[in-house]
Image (cartoon, rainbow, N blue to C red; front, top):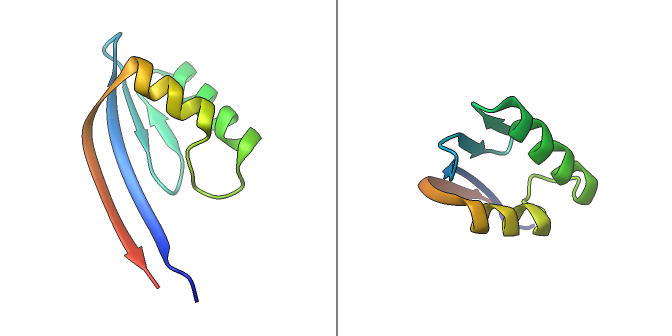
Length: 73
């Protein structure tokens, strides 16, 4: 039996928009960013995870403003 990690975070993009990640989906007050993030993640993973390209984008353009997590198993 494995351990399942769930996490959420919220980041602020340099342009002022907010991006959020959860096990359910990506959200943003900028619909273009939410769509791009969702598509990029779907191309590289079938589980709730952050694709490497998205992680690099977040590190370059966003500041973390909130993080939460839990584990089950």
